Length: 196
Image (tube, rainbow, N blue to C red; front, side, top):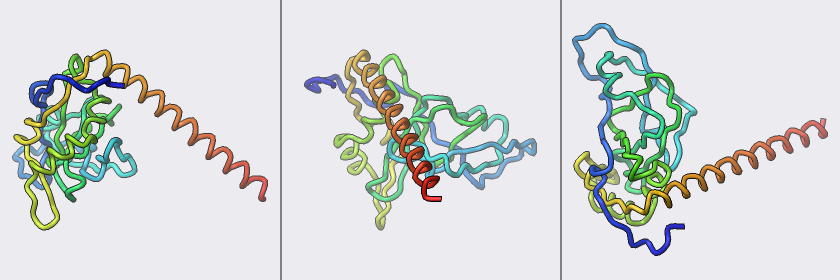
């Protein structure tokens, strides 16, 4: 879909705004705290957000403003098993005032240069995986990257029109998967009903 792959390369910081998240257990003098949902490392999988468990955290209004997630933000994990370091996913329609913990980086892309869908897929390609594994600090089976290393991630930039075509394509594939899954569930329900 992306032709011969001879694209310009930039560093991630040149096409995005990157921030770390809120630290659990931190001390604050502000007693006017809000209980808000937050994304933990367990929510961020490779290519999707796991919504099965959403935890909450107490945060100040300023922290909520600073860390609030928006649709099309890309969340990237700081560390874990070596094969999981730098895994990422686009978040769509996050809960109101949803923020993220400090072991997750929020990447807000310049969508005129880089689409979230393309970047999410790019994080899974060999060159990105190789970069994270080489850059990561590793101790006893655990690997982690820091903000500087993520900012320096080399990103290939296909023409934006090609990225948009890819985004539309993946949207249709996702709809097709959902339709297939709904049909599978319907067939299972019919079979169960007939077996009664």
